[in-house]
Image 1 (tube, helix red, strand yellow):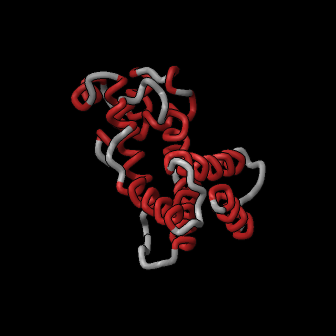
Image 2 (cartoon, rainbow, N blue to C red):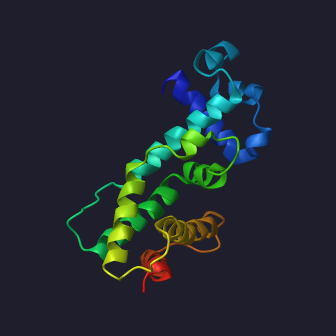
Image 3 (cartoon, rainbow, N blue to C red):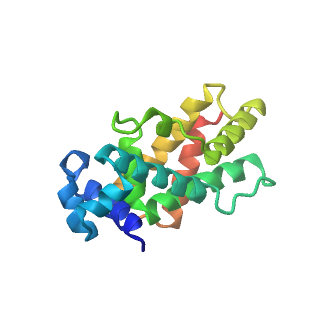
Length: 185
């Protein structure tokens, strides 16, 4: 792993362990096993570093959401595939998932990054719009639909992360079905 990647990983780990406000450059230097000159060679401020961690996590999540996506499937199957990918991303990359979930609306994250181009969001929105056009999804603002289905997955993952329950295949299917029923007619 490159020094830059070490710094980004150490920052994400520290945010996950201690919370953003407790993360200092000295903790990052120590955890990444780098000197201050190395960090400042890549990032001029903590804000710039945290924004880069966020940007990379969002890119990783966007790629994961579209992994194996098949646009030729029916609407319900495409919806389930996207939601399954969201759930799998959270289970496989919990630190990134929680960081995105916790800090997407933080003033620490720049508005440009909060609204960065995201092809996976475009795909989700097209599925939601198509479902509304077909009369299968409630005729409410697609951004609200997206927040609702994201909220279902987020809530389930948070319970899973603190070991309230396992997520076996049956529970995963129930979660996907619940997220569909939350917005469907």
